[in-house]
Length: 384
Image 1: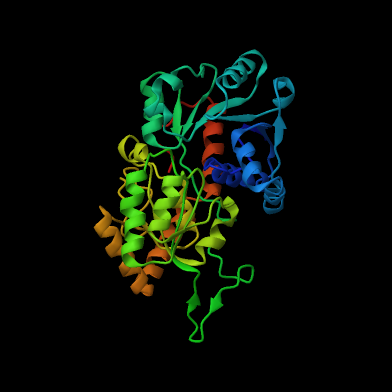
Image 2 (image 1 turned 120 degrees about the horizontal axis):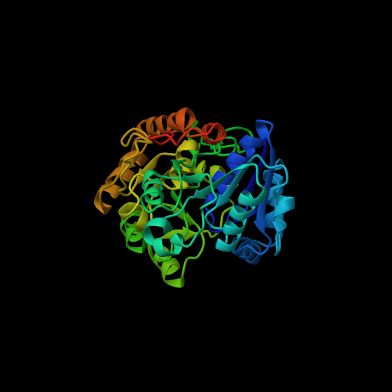
């Protein structure tokens, strides 16, 4: 098939968590032999910020890491007749401008012999419903929502004809344990692994959506346990970097997403601290960070979130700390008990390989596309 995707950015992952899943699914489509085109605005805010922080070389490094993936960076106006010529399947991400989303719908109505899906991987449908209600999806074949709460919201509000749950997943071609010759591990004389530190957290500041949670579940436990800890991420205000310094945590700034596995291999444990909207309004939806950590085989401890969609097995894939005291206790246990940490990490990675690879999601999307091509109504249950 000819697959066309309209996303915020393929080449930049600066404050752009969707880049991981986009790159992984796109790679699977290419591997399956489909013809793929990805369109992104040439002046995307993520690209601008990436270049400002890391320079044009960061774009070149992306192409080195993903030689099979390319995008068309367009200005305005975009020639949709050219972009969609011969398309069979079209995906339009929620971060696109409403005008473009509507224009693609009109193109589908007038001359498009393709299936058209809207892909939502954010919490705005629940936290900002008025903003989302203005999106014209009347000509779209349906919505691909990254959680059942989002899917149900579209159907309940009448924003879409049909909707499917299409969870995120890990690109295991890139996200895997790096204990091979590409990233040689330093070993002590007794054969034990030499780490750069105890705890690493990879995540962006998040507009104060988890400031209190970061202090309770990361800053204070790291300080009280005296851990060698590091944080990677962007948009940290001076107050946040000061709090990190006060807790004795190294702040290392932006990290290319494809470098995350290498960094995980150098630390003994990581944590997941979801933003407040995901905990309060979107139960059951993990962010991509959970998939990344488990795919890389690093022991993971989460601050509270409810896995109501049964993607994982809490206690076997990862541990859950109900408060800062439990976080400190569980980190201490994993750091003191390597066999326990190893068993946790291995179970989590098996879950990813069995159920949550980007290859799984590519297959799910192709099945949804076949259903629509055959005019079969939407499934009652989400794909898992």
